[in-house]
Figure 1 (cartoon, rainbow, N blue to C red):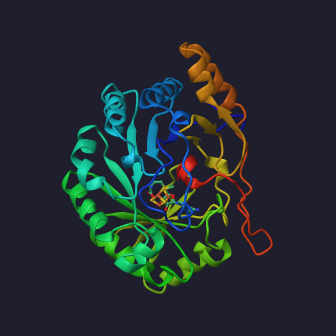
Figure 2: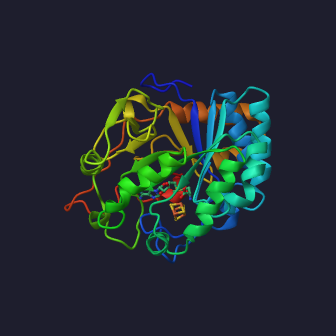
Amino acid sequence: MIDPFGRAINYLRVSVTDRCDFRCVYCMPEHMTFLPKADVLSLEELDRLCGAFIRKGVRKLRLTGGEPLVRRDVMKLFRSLGRRLDSGELDELTLTTNGSQLGRYAGELADCGVRRVNVSVDTLDPDRFRQITRWGDLGKVLAAIGEAQKAGLKIKINVVALRGVNEHELPTLVQWAHDRGMDMTLIETMPMGDVDADRTEQYLPLSLVKAELAKHFTMDSSPERTGGPARYVRVRETGGRLGFITPLTHNFCESCNRVRLTCTGMLYMCLGQEDSADLRAVLRSSGDDAVLDAAIDEAIARKPKGHDFIIDRRHNRPAVARQMSLTGG
Ligand code: SAM
Ligand code: SF4
């Protein structure tokens, strides 16, 4: 699939549920209203849609959410998609998780062909972890990371940088992750969806974080790009890799290779734009794969050039009304 700006689209991120067992302050309000079950695609529908994207040239799939591992029977989907790794139709199957259920599923995920998992850990302080996630148990997540490593999964830690919350802990987090052979990616908060907290209070530009980290570490810039919004450095003292996802302060759209599917079958061609294609309607109206493939082609032809995220004192409102848990991070 080639979009109107000549970018090859070979990466699909799929949100398999909008539900979650955490309520991270930057992601959801505490009393979150979830979608009615009938609106959410069944696992069979998700599998059929993923199959269509794979036919169209997607080589890398990431399952996310909400929390993908709280979806009942989600392993059936992993199993089915894992067979596409075996057949060579797919290069990589990964997931992003909060880690709460990872201990339980690590072995099975490895068995399905998953090799790399992103786990979100914003702090190593149990009380602060509870404050950020509202409902999370840090001890359980850390134990799960150990289980996953034992099962042979390569872990990358995602950290959302939050002003005055985990700001001063970031060098410790880098050292901790790298000491355990895990890469780490720092993420700037993105203005998506209404949450209870004040965004301008939370927002911490990664340019400041990088300047602070430079007092602790020597960061050698690395040419590695993944087609996504992350830029990487290699930390000389630890030998580990550190990524920076700065959607607000950098423009990364020129190399964008991805589209995102929500758990209701809406395809978002850009994380920062409202335009979407309703693939659930197509899926439920016809069993004909040719119709589905044509709908995907039509959507990719509308992929925009870039996003318009803005966060500042004058624009303290979500740039995009939907939550990250719907589109998937
Ligand atoms: N529940 C899983 C998790 O937390 O890893 C997967 C879904 S979560 C939406 C994916 C990633 O998006 C997480 O690393 C999370 O920290 C990040 N995220 C959520 N809301 C965000 C926001 N408003 N700005 C920046 N990152 C956000
Ligand atoms: Fe759940 Fe992930 Fe959102 Fe936290 S960031 S509330 S773990 S979906």
